[in-house]
Image (cartoon, rainbow, N blue to C red):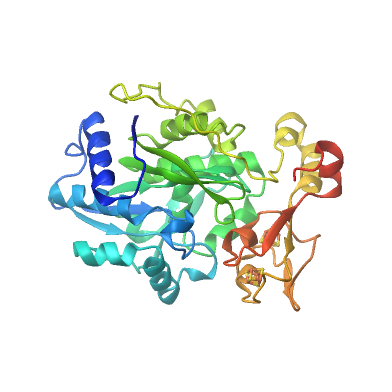
Length: 374
Ligand code: SF4
Ligand code: SF4
């Protein structure tokens, strides 16, 4: 597990920082060999300018791609944004706005528009025995995971492990959210996905992360580090300690399964300072799920789930939230109207809203038990 300071996205600084990380990890030549097709998987949750700190910065993707090219392999950039953007037109917009198309053009590499799926079996520990994954990603010779460090309204945190949920094509993400609504099984699913995809390397964009209501509606947070590891579980575990975010189910599952390795921190004597991130304002409290028997935990957890609220002034009526909702819990009038009985609190609507028009509200029971979080 390697870390190095990196204060800006200036290409020279990023390339030098990536070089230091790879040197500390012993280089990439062991895993990336000439002729390999190497999938670079950034976080491209939606089409946003890199300055918004929603997506992995293109300067990092470019620096890693250059390293792969120098080893004689062929990198390509691939992701499947959530909601309805996972078709060719949506992908074109996302690659352009996030700066990935420009990187690909400069380096003469591909961005992938291939949305074909392949069914991948998971182990009996997964709540779903098989999942559909982007075929082009699954069949790559190697995957390099390039997440962005962010807090997350639904899972509390998104980093290395959660970034590979993007390997699930477009609207299937919402389908799996619907089928796996509770936090612990969802954590198991994320861990299983990482075990199925086995990225050879993770390099995390931590120059500027996101705090608050990520992954798309939080605020940019200067962090000033790049992190890299061969094990995504170990990387996340350490990153969480640096940003002082606790109680993250995917990390808890990885620890319980013995997947978090011993922390051999390769920092070459650099001083590493923690940078606490403000957590998401309304996180579903998993105390209930972890401490009560299932017959009690399920109904109480449901009563505590966060509910979306739609801002009349910000909403432009684009309907992306309706198309992203796995529970069919929204209908459109002037602004989206919520059917509370159908809503599962997955917050896909908030994540995919391009106008930050979706706020998250606590239910009455949640306010009563835990107080107001705002
Ligand atoms: S809430 Fe957001 S995603 Fe939904 S219709 Fe309004 S602007 Fe579009
Ligand atoms: S309305 Fe409810 S179920 Fe639908 S996307 Fe939003 S939070 Fe999820």
